[in-house]
Length: 445
Figure: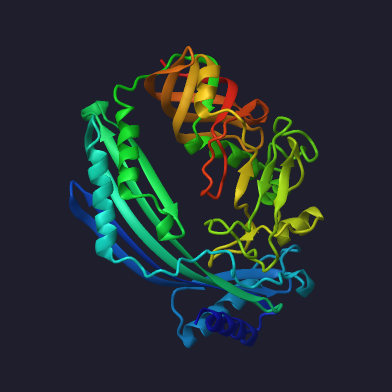
């Protein structure tokens, strides 16, 4: 159905007067179950269809979307999109890929992005959520469970364009999560555990997930503010990817084209310490971030964005590449209601040889961050400030839990002072281990 619907959208666009067009069709099913205090709190099942059409009239473009697949709706969508495009400002960089640029791969065969086993029964999901909650509640020091949930989703994605591209594939995912609380009143602290996999058979047991949530929350009992000053800061693996996320945002072609990036003059320069690579591998089997082709039908491929600490390039789709006088890197992503934009997937940062415990021992006195709250990031200067909580470290050992503090620095300097642990989790799309940053400013007590 998805492939036929995409072709019907293209036909409607041609009939309405579009010079060229592309269509995205996403069909999906999602089931989620939440429990609290041993009782079912929320159950939801959604079956949806999202269709998006982008049309081009010369160098003018417009996007429309709908959830209705009736033929008359498709005709109306196309007519409205063409009318909008005729009134839109010209964009000299807009346009579809040339046929010779298109990916030869049009499906996800061999990538294992879809679990063929039957959709789980809602009762089975509820049982998982209850078991995770019970395991968390059984941990000493836990006063209540904020929420325990289990979910499943399945999507079929199809992209077609008037330049001859047509391809699609299926995705599925299965998740279990639990949020536990320790303490009461103003002394309450919470933490969580969550696991997701493509294949249900790969998902850890609910008991493992619930127990981890309980252990993490119980360890936060009695949190207080840390001292203020300049100290080393260790980003736990759960939050370390945020640092690399700031780097990848700064090399995104959209930011570079606007001149709004603190790395805009850094091509070919060191942005990480020597020895660090940042690699994108969009073809990892059985991984949620894997991309068979990009959102403009271009081939995706393994790339070194940072090699031995040195920045190698910008993340580009067709429009940003044209604006910068470069070639697309096959990194376009899009939803049904918007044109493509550059995006990364399946990143890996070079791991270190030390464990997280080794870095805690070696840092002496400082802050171990396990949660980040809010952010103030200046995209043009790299100035960085975030709320944080975690644990205070003294003499190389965790001393007590901390909350309500702020960490600050400059991303350019911070990323050049990284030490990596070896604890990245292999099933994640983004493989970033715990990261130690020397000399950040902490505002606490």
